[in-house]
Each structure stands twice: as C-alpha cells, then as structure tokens.
Length: 93
Image 1 (cartoon, rainbow, N blue to C red):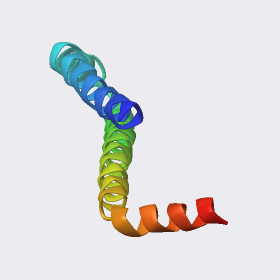
Image 2 (cartoon, rainbow, N blue to C red):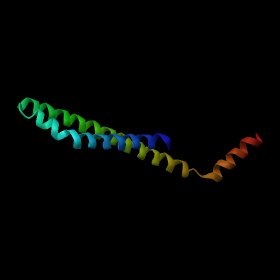
Image 3 (cartoon, rainbow, N blue to C red):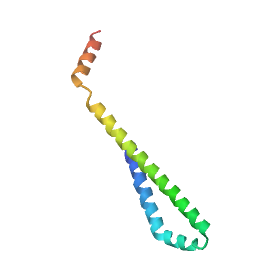
Image 4 (cartoon, rainbow, N blue to C red):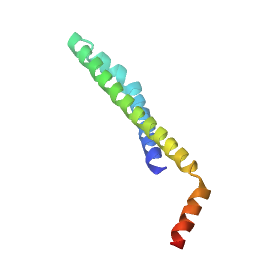
C-alpha cells in the first residue's frame, strides 16, 4: 500500500506545484517572451513537454493503483480450505 500511495502523492503534489507555477508566473513569462515568434514557439514546446511529463506521471500512478487492485483480488480469491488440506497432507508425510 505504501508504494501506490507514494506514486499518488507524487502525482498530486507535482500537479499542484505545476498549477501554482503556471498561475503565478505563466502570464509574466509569456509577456516577457512575446516579442519574438520563435520564443513563443519554444515556450509552447516547453509547455507540451511539461504536460506530457505530467501525463506520464499520472499514467504511472494509475497503473500502480490498478496493479495493486489486481493483486488484492488474486489474494482474496485463493481458496482457504484447499490450502489447509494441502498443508495437512504435507505434515503427515
């Protein structure tokens, strides 16, 4: 449980920090680099890389949650009676 909550915490904190940075500094940076068209294109490319990285973090986090749910279902579905009978046979031998 610790690993999946760690990934979820990382995804949430990175998203919150990204939103704060864009909210406070995005307009200022955009206006500062608005003079040259190439600088705008580079800023848009940087924003695309930034968004792709954030998406990758969220996909990895969700993947960890799905994997943990699948593992938990497998553990719950193991029949207990058969396991006890096999252990009892091993003891007698």
